Length: 143
Image (cartoon, rainbow, N blue to C red; front, side):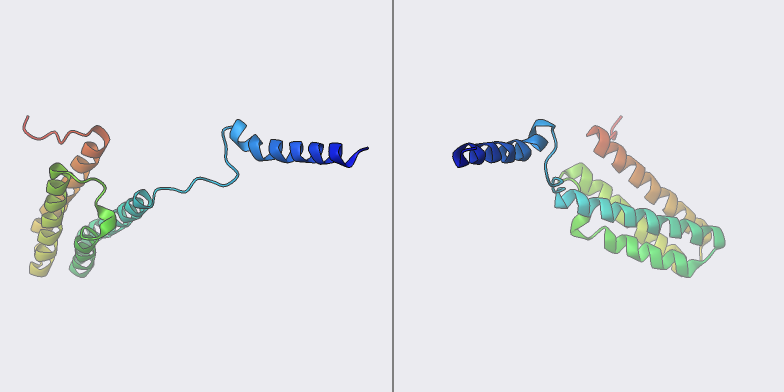
């Protein structure tokens, strides 16, 4: 067989092998995820963990656990990965969340389990409202 023909056949197979993932709708390497989305997902995962620890502290009336995790939630809400959307509504949800987390910390300082429970409920409500807003694009405020 002629070397020119062998080269053409080899080149054809190489081109086919390289194009196969494209024809099948896949790529040879997984697509890179958007860094902002990954950062936000990680922040939300941490938020859930700290919120669960606050609930544990409420159930056990462990004010140190409540205060520690409330402070972590406030700090988390100030990180770059928190901002999933730039809008006045999103900023309002963030302020409501932070204010509730700070109230949670203050209630734990005062040893007031009822005030801490109310602050936790308000914080949770702000989370649920914000996640609803993120899914629908509507804040649901004003009617």
